[in-house]
Image (cartoon, rainbow, N blue to C red; front, side, top):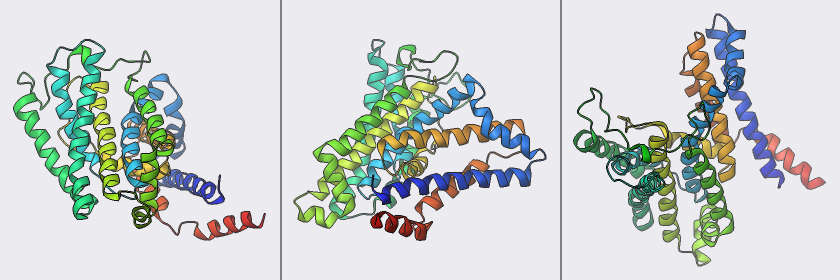
Length: 347
């Protein structure tokens, strides 16, 4: 491992520790029982199988969104379309989970494939605009999120909605379309295994395939990649399709894994979370797993401390913002980075 890469890992850990220290400061300032609140925040998520299950189930969609963004970042693209992809893939995939009568094994698989295809097709729009016209992918993807929200709500209102229920939800999914629970006494479902497998496959794709090499070279220097014979426009389109498929699969897996109906009436927020997860992982697909679990642990801890004491849940938004700011700030610990690298060169 290079000195620069090892330092980046240390820098990420420091960012996490700083965020946790800030959480302690918030608790000390707000809580009437700060010591007990800190104990709840740090220890209670590991105190029972149920809470551990909450960490795992919360990490599943974060893994998918983190993988989608990691692929984007590797190509030096900043696309936040995963936010809308999760929603629209969940809505369209719900059609397959509600009505077609597939066998037990094929029912969830069919829904996941449809979700992935929806994500792939939708993401081709900002990808194609970027590849052909040089349109800023962040702007087009953010605009598309609102469009996808509107389309998804239209489908929910006019095609999926269960008229026998007062709230805005779909008909119930067929039991055969639901993902199986793999740990009794928790809500950990088979989507967790799919997420882990997806991370491994994305790693192999990025580091062991020709396409992955071209994506990484394009991300490092698009002009040099083009000069070397790489079709940069094609790479941009492929990156968007791969990221869209991952996010789309993640959206429907979250629906048929944890819910019995399509219940989202707003964007679920996973697209923005994915950017933070990818940054924490250094855009490494396998590192995404650990980063997702860390963020999931923080969220479960913040939820528990909110329910057990007087600490607001908004604390987690503050922690996430601090982590993103520190990791994205190039000057954070910069002078120590130079010393670290120079020390390694002297050896």
